[in-house]
Length: 338
Ligand SMILES: *[C@@H]1O[C@H](CO)[C@@H](O)[C@H](O)[C@H]1NC(C)=O
Ligand SMILES: *[C@@H]1O[C@H](CO)[C@@H](O)[C@H](O)[C@H]1NC(C)=O
Image (cartoon, rainbow, N blue to C red):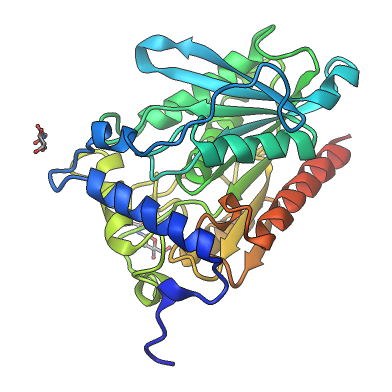
């Protein structure tokens, strides 16, 4: 048992193993030793989903560009049920995709499917953000893009009329969870700049946090799928400012250099998802503990048998459960805000 290989966790369907293997191969090959990414190589393997102006699986989608000079755009997913809804009746679910701040986009097949599902199931208007990627663009570019999208949504007519921006949710998985958190902090700090936008909840799905210290799970699961240690070290190095280390406030949020959010009265209620085969789990639990210590309302949901990013693989039954829990969280936050 001592040599049990964490990569071969017993609960992974063959289809997931193949996808995970391919994803790891492609991203490892695209990452160069000198810290750059071979984007041309990456494009050969990207499976992108087009927008669907007419509904597909009960959801239509379209892309909006905010700033073409930095390729800042988002994809909006509108459930078909919206046409029967009153104006300003649906919550707005702002989503940041994962990929270590360096990879993927809202039109990546898996993320398009995930946002489509959230839009249909909740129902909600989902907004999936194409932020700038590292290492070409480092911290704080990604956070600026997140905040600028929130400012844009605060303006008139940015979304279909069924959207109610006084019921916003910030969400993301992995690096996107980190981004959603930091965007929530900034929106809370600068609340007076927003006329209509109110953030009622924050959904962090296996968020990417870290630090110099090696945690027990990082060492035990150092070769686990997707977020093995040498990959996450590379991601932090590509994202954080030159000369800083992983104890930066962007990564080690709960450490002494992290921002004190205890005084932020309107920081939203937060849901944190953790997987038992995820090397990042200790940092995620610390994040949850830190939120509570800072006087924030935070809920932790554990999936003991799940790997990082499991919810993106619909062949894993627990994936559906997570979407249902996200929906329940959103609806509860709305009920409690009344
Ligand atoms: C990194 O390596 C690639 C491929 O060898 C090269 O094209 C690129 O200019 C290098 N970049 C830097 C910053 O050294
Ligand atoms: C980083 O996080 C760890 C664990 O929470 C903490 O012990 C350490 O002091 C932190 N370091 C800094 C500089 O924030």
